[in-house]
Length: 270
Ligand SMILES: [Zn+2]
Image (tube, rainbow, N blue to C red; front, side):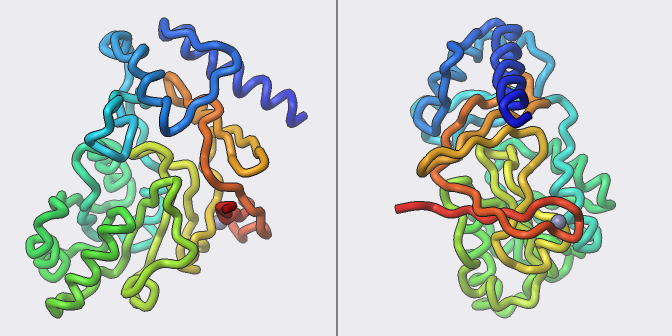
């Protein structure tokens, strides 16, 4: 059964690339290093595709930075779910603007009954004022910024937000959250993105309440395990899914969550 799914997931992904006019070899294997070059060949086709785009790297100075096509109208359901759990007040987004997640974030906020306040990372005083006086309930950002911004809030005697939604880069998932987040009374949701705005591991409300890096696999991916790596193919709803994209961790499986999904934790081997 597993083998049949494997075949279908890979073949479907290859077929999407061929249909987009940028066919790939059957044994294609993607990685952080080569994904930009592979996507470069697709770029001339993107203007005629019905799609949104995400950047192909978390590094805006990446040599081969280009566009990764995403489905139009993708509404970031994991984000919407946690925002609802956190109580649906305003969201202060400090994710870099070049991630281009404003449209899906807008739809997630709409679903959760929240509004968005975009805050440049460099402007911590404005963000701090917003947390204090603008009905901000959740700060959405990456781990480094969550650490720096929470330290800033504490140092300047600003209140901490009621909740954080922290996006981890796939290769940098911490075993535990750093101080002062770990000790803070704020609720904390976490998810893991393979490219900016492309979640692969996410949390339901029960897992976010643990404040631990325990996750559910995002839907739409086929996962394969190698000795020290994990390969993912998907997501299936993307116009040109990632194919056997190499991740530098293994997934350790835990019990089933009360929500019915399997709980996983990432393990990085030396
Ligand atoms: Zn769950």
